[in-house]
Amino acid sequence: MAGRNGARAQGIRRIVTANNSPYDTLDPHAVFDIGRIASRLNMYDCLVRWVDNPPQLVLWLAEKVDISPDGLTYTFTLRKGARFHDGTPITADDVVFSMERLLGMKKGAYGLFKGAIDPGKTAAIDPGTVRFTLNQPFAVFMSVLSELWIVNSRLVRANEASGDWGAAWLNRNEAGSGNFRLRRFDPAVGFQADRFDGHFMGWDQPHVDQTEFRVVLETTSRVLGMLKGDFNITDGYLPLDQIKRLRESDSIRIEEAESLRTMYFIIHNQRAPLNDVNMRKALSYAFDYDAFNNQILGGSVARNPGIIPNTMWGAPKDLKGYTYDLAKAKEHLAMVKAPLRPLSIGVLAGFGQSEQAALLLQNGLAKIGVEAKLVSEPWSVIQGKYNDPDRTHDLIPLWRSAYFADPHNWTGYIYNSRNIGSGNPSFYRNARVDELTDKALLLTDREQRQPMYEEVSRILVEEAAGLFIYNTKWYGPFTRNVRGVRFCPIGDAQDIRWMSLA
Image (cartoon, rainbow, N blue to C red; front, top):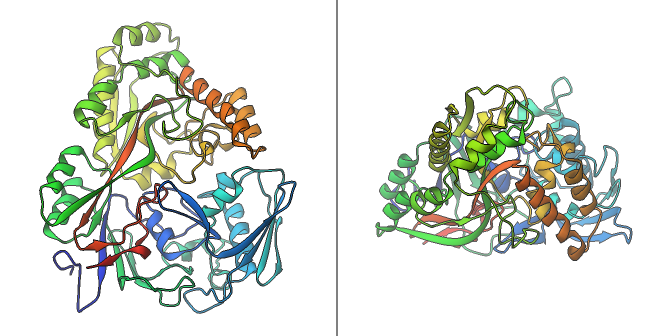
């Protein structure tokens, strides 16, 4: 059992994190989210990695990269001596297999690479050199390689069943090279992992022996566990009243940082009556932004009228979003031609703000004569069906986190129609948005790309493609004996490598 403020057992230095999302799979190519990123971030490695804040992209498994002048080929030299947890050397063949597996399974981060690189276009030049040949220039290729988690190809192949790419086995096992290796996994409980002494980055800095990520859906249970010393860390986006409660404890400290995480409602743009822009505008006018941001959240967030965080380039500085205006909501509702029906709002269980936002919208809609029903489900359940146009909810209040520091993360990836079924859960289609976001990926000059993303932001607001609420700050709770925290908006400080216990 974890000990008070140290999570120690028999001399083991262990950091315990209370997580608000279930870990239903350990397969690094099956999921693409922040809620379950801890298993990928701690047990796997990529060629590159995002660190610190503002996020910086650094070479990781790779020690060198050569990019052709036409931007079509990327040749990486791997670090010498890097090994998987079973001692097998990491070679270019493993990188090739990992890319082929991701493209073949068409899950997880597949949408990041879809159309940019095809199967068969990744080649091992020699054991220490791998080359990617793109279909066309792709401005964010280096950035999104942070989601190409490298798996042990020999181990995965040995556990394949009926051509499943080893998916059934990787659901419950790992085949990585990361800072920690799996000790125990139970989807209902979480996972434990031991420090991998043979990690290629070494362990010169202070470190811990073991990390544990427990599934604790209830916010109050996570907070109480922090106060009792059962947990060392929990999520950095707790309700304001719980943050205040933790601040009052002498055993807890709250670290604050600017983040890149916009809260919004996914709106099913292809399901009647939400396929009518007037219905979506009625929704946008029926949400009380000031009450949510300034009263419920105590002004701890900043109004973000569009999907791109205000602090990110590509977000128009003069963008005018929606305000709480029931008269305008009723005006647009009167123009909706399709019959009205009760709307389903999918609430993320364990995420207090998701429920609070849903209740506030439900209240606003009731005032204009629209019924909304709240359905609370774990993130893994909601995420598992939100790319299915028939099974997903009408609306989902959630966050668009940073997976890479580029406006494409908040625009082209989640609103380009090419990504419907693999990244565009709004099922949104707009030819101009497709044109702009596709063209922006062919360019490397930020000054040329920026006005394109600004125009896309304006279109998304004008068409009420989503209901956009705020950009947040991160308030990370830690027991005071945790040292070495390096917050990065991409991963939300779930990388245990840097941490130690005093």
